[in-house]
Amino acid sequence: MNKILVTGGSSMVGQHLQKYIPEAKYLSSKDCDLKDPEAVKILFNDFKPNLIIHLAAKVGGIMDNINNPASFFDDNILINTNVVKYAYESGCKNLISILSTCIYPDHCESYPLREEDLHIGPPTKTNFAYGYAKRAMSVQIDAYNKQYNTNYSCIIPCNLYSEHDHFDGDKAHFVSSLISKIHDAKVNNKKQITLFGSGSVFRQFMYADDLAKAISSITYGISPFIYNVCNPENKTIKEIAEIAIKCLDADGLEICWDTSKPDGQIRKDACSNKFIEYNPRFTFTSLEEGIRKTYEKKYINIKN
View 1: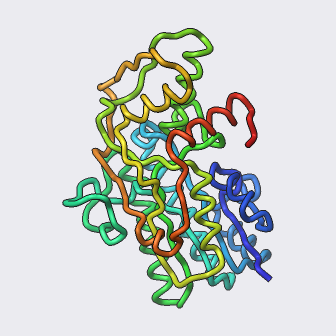
View 2: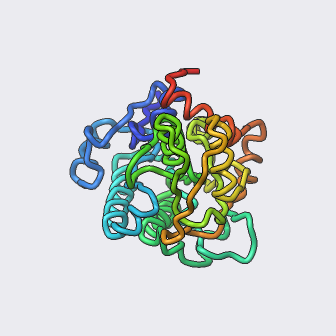
View 3: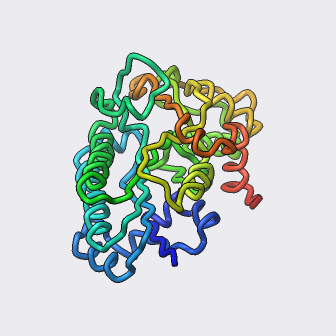
């Protein structure tokens, strides 16, 4: 019998994953403080999972990362260390952990990034603490596999968005914040929105349901792996904003670029060839379709 435990069960990805793996036990922060080693130990020993899907993390937007680097580092190191350590001690042989392309080096000689590029340089300064904390988990997982013969694996997704994301404040990610600003402009007849940076940097954005679908496609066991899972569309922030304005029928809305705020990494597009070789029929939701779905489900309550 498969006993699947999902940390971060109420997160953006966790809410999508429930559609694909309904039989799993989904944990939220209300169920267990993953920073507390004793609480994690008791929970894992009581439930005895044979697969853990580790989604839980402290996450936030670029300014939140810049303003609170110690919190991002400490919380993520504690969460990840406890999950891996007590997964092993409870007898759980299978674990899939979700990382982030923020773990990749700030600069590389060639793009798109491959899994082999992970340790050739430090993460970008705007996500430095978070990036190193998440990268450390890939090292921890590799160490456990080598020493204890576990079957622990990593997925590295690009930036995510969906109707289950935060839409306001420092916790909002770019696409969700962008949709919120455009919606507010439409409702209140505003002619302009303000976005951080110059709009010139490149990003990949993936509808979070795609990541949930990818996780479910490899849940039931292959040898330890580390896969990039990233929508291949790589566009500038300016291009993404223009697509969103078009998708939300806000033609004519002007963008003011606040260049006093940081752009972040110039580019960090990653190649998903290894994952696609494993799952050649997998398809990604286009940026246009994902933005429309997110807007409709968040603001118009269209369910399908």
